[in-house]
Length: 156
Image (cartoon, rainbow, N blue to C red):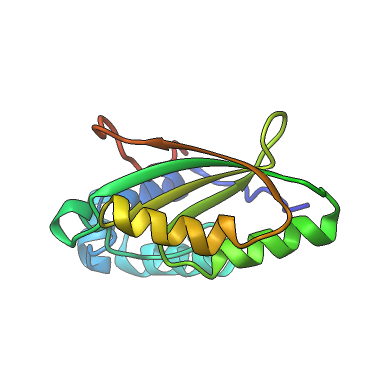
C-alpha cells in the first residue's frame, strides 16, 4: 500500500499553483506561493521524489486534434482471476486511445475512458480490444454527446 505524504501549507500552495499552470518558472511559482525561490525549488524537487507529482503534461483539446469522440466503456470478463485481470489491463494499456482504465467493483470488472476520432475509429478499436478477446463476456459503451466538465485538479 502506498503511504500518504504529509503536506504542509506551503506544499499545498505549491501543488495548487502547479495544477493550474505547471509551466510557471520557479521564480514565478515562488512569488505566487510567498516563498523564496530556493525553498520553492527544494519543495518541488521533494514532491517529485516522493511521487506526489507524478507527471507534467500538456492537456490537449480533443476536438482540435481529431479525437472528438469520447466513449465510456464497461467491460465484464468471463474469468476474473488475477492473471486474466492483469492480461486485460496490459491489453488496454497498449492502446493509445484508452485514456484511463479502472478496475471497479461491484458491477463490471473494468471501466475505460476512450478518446477516438469518430465512430468508425471506435469500431476498429472495439474489434481489436474487445471482439477478438475470448475472455470478454460483456461490453457496454456510452458515448459522450457533450463534455460539461473535464478537470485534472485534485484538492490538497
